[in-house]
Image (cartoon, rainbow, N blue to C red):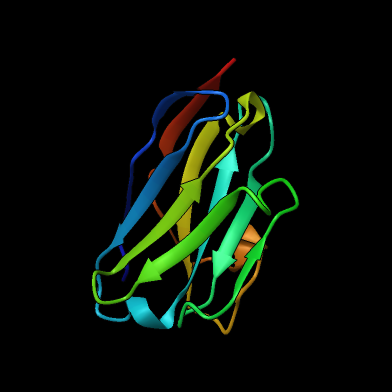
Length: 124
């Protein structure tokens, strides 16, 4: 069992930055690929990016590539999402998720555990 708790959300003006954290419980955290997803109002859940268990490989959605960076610290059981050059369209609830399969994947159904989400609001 893995429990995930996101933090770091908030309100920021366009062009600003935020860093989200996702703290995981469980001894097997280091074996999971960790993904970030988001859900904007009245939209479907959207893949943001994923990092492989060893931190050596990351994949990003087109909307995130070049602006967002995922990293992880397995010693702290934490994964991060650094978001720069934020835009109003980045406004959403952001979720981290853990994938116990080989991964990494952008398919939400492949993920076994989810956090409760943290709100990010970007204003003009």
